[in-house]
Length: 222
Image (cartoon, rainbow, N blue to C red):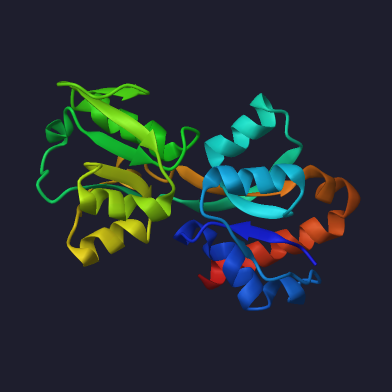
């Protein structure tokens, strides 16, 4: 059985659908019940040490692991493009109002971090890391996606940048509003990639072919 790891966000849809609808089994690759993780670091670590075989992973994170950390993994397909937002407190209507505030991103190695910095600098604000924000700057902090809505509701953060469903949850709960769609900042950017351990390719190439076929079928169904 192939072992799938995922975070509970829409980025996981293709992998979860491939398992739940039996598309992996139909392609000749039975799959175990997908394993839930709560943070990108935990998910990446599980892939790196071999606790899971395949995950959806932030594209910059996959590149960092492969090129920077020399972790033997490979990207086999896009997971999805676009799909994320900068969500802010209801009191904020202009990007400039984030001056001196704090925004959460899911990982330093994420397109969310890259595009949040692009949005802020375009508004004349300076993103800072590891130091408190002052007038003219915005502090970026890494936070698990599941913690972002509570942090916004409590006022600990002025906003967050992440994939759905958390922007929708913030709006449904009345604690925040979508400020920018990241797809409007960089159209059709790669967000998550389906990433496998390299040994799966070298030792079980037919399994990886079956996985890829099932992912394509799942994305077509979605």
